[in-house]
Image 1 (tube, one colour):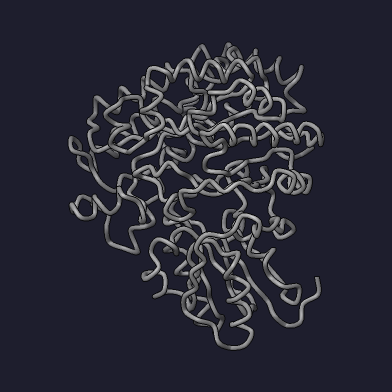
Image 2 (image 1 turned 60 degrees about the vertical axis):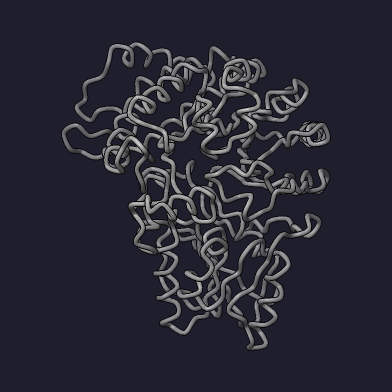
Length: 493
């Protein structure tokens, strides 16, 4: 695309303190929002893109720099903005942190865009080109028919997964989540045929459907999901996909059948906790309605369709003590969950949790904006009613090591294979647990005594009898059927 002297540089900043999150292309996701910004930008702009997951920012000529950031990446975004502004380059920032902490962000960039950008980005660019950009544009909620197909040619890095969004909004309103605040309570569904048209543009074999709530808890939403999954089958998209859903994903066998048929191999479920007390604290109403006693039956139902479960669990509820944390760990390991996302409760700005704990002066790491770098769910930013911030952190490091060591990871993989009878699901689970282990235990991945290798084994060289014996089983699986599948997961075929 030929430009006419106008250069837009889009940047996805990365917190340099959490390289465990970006240690592998399989755990680095393309910033979908910047792909939408690119799609909304007129042809007379040349667009360049830097993703710090792969390439550290370095100054380069541009008329305009556009930044996005999660809360933990905000300090790095401010550093980049300062460098650009010192060179006379105009800076604009949007995304979740800019929407939740607008006044703060306005101190570090020239223009802030809040909410969803579809209706205001063209207005901002027009104002910028005429020399009259405003410091603030409020995007609000975008009519669903105005959401464009993502411009994907800018994603030049070796991402393993393609990302796509089929709906926006979440009616759940969980206490710890800012999605409802950003995208609204209304579940806004894109036209199924339009979504399928965009899916046909995807080039990678693995797809992450990033909807915060893939199947809403209404009959119409379930019917819509079935139409989408059937359409993926009819168009022979031949993708393996991961999505995010609530526990109601298991309610309808027809949803599960067509999800599996269309390539659903792993589903992330917002489980959060295994006790009524903890769920009540975080206002996880759907899980409370279903009842914690229903979890195992739901997991089993999903497994019967060959789909593995990535369980999202939160540690550090206000009522949590050491016993509660260990009990949650034991529940995870014995519940039927296949891959584990075990995060520390973090008070993100814009949430009820943040507002309440800030008012109570309970947030320990509150030197903003510098302390935002710790808001990545693997560092305790506050304590609980029973544990100090330091005690919570120490307990979590113990728990992570007991869940993400190589023996446990491999046992979970074989359990997944048995429960789902799906080699692809088992392999995805195996890789996911390795990635989460590297994220949570990144400080232990080193060559020091007592450290871990990147494969989540002790670097002492001593291996358990279980690992030695199962090595032979894995060798057979690789030889018989996993080589091509591994290539596919790594994006080589």
